[in-house]
Each structure stands twice: as C-alpha cells, then as structure tokens.
Length: 155
Image (cartoon, rainbow, N blue to C red; front, top):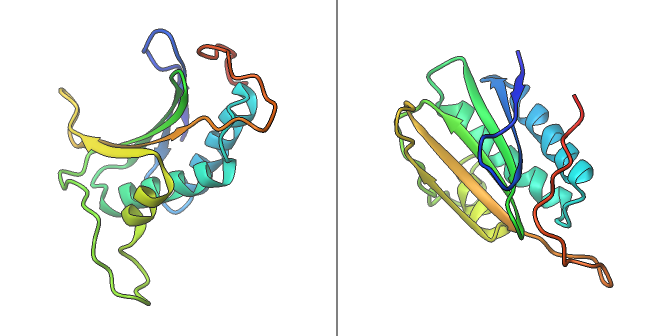
C-alpha cells in the first residue's frame, strides 16, 4: 500500500510515500525519486539519485521490524534530499566489507556518491531517518537563479 501526502516543511517542494517493507520497495522508491526529478526539473543526475535511493531503502527494509518504511523526497534550495524513515532501532554505520562480499557496502557507496548523508533519531518516531543530499548540478548554459521549486507531483 502506498499513501502519499505532501511534506510539511514550508518553503520547499516535497513528497512522502509510505512503502511496504518488502522486495518491491526499492523499485517503487526509485520511480518516485525519478518522477520528482523530472516533475520538479531538478538538475541532478537521476541515475545517482536512483542508486542512493536503492541503497537507503534496501538498508532500511533489511533491518525494518515493522510493515512499512517512509520515503521523503524534498527539494530545498540548491539540493535534492532523500530521507528514508524506518522503525528499526539500529543506527546505520558503514561496514568494512571485504572485496567480493555480496552485501555490506551500501553506506560506503552512499557516502561516495552524495554530497552529504547522515542519520538522526526523530522525536516521537520509533527508529530513525537516514538521508542523503545531492547538490544541484546544472547542465552547461542552464540558468540556476531560481529559488525553491513549487510544482506538485502528479497523483
């Protein structure tokens, strides 16, 4: 089940999506992030944003104890931010995975591909939010003098 509601932070464009904590969550999250990038015309690499989203969501559902996670996509001035909320009490930490390991390098990949990432506990929310930010990178000759975007996502 996916339930969508706008984020509550004033002055930026955003979307929250509740995703079932299962195998389909990463693909659904990538589609939402790509739609936001296209609809809001955010000058970031959509492939990098999709990769970051996959890693954050996969990590969340791997450790999630409840039935769902929440993806929040926002576009504060100068960046794209991807937040993944889960109810797992474990705090994320990049692992020192050996070469050839099939898992354990997700947060190292996130750290290498984004401009900033971190996690925090949220008052009144069981668990945490893990987030990553990509700075806007305009195409050559593109005007970047705009402020926060305000176009809503469809449906």
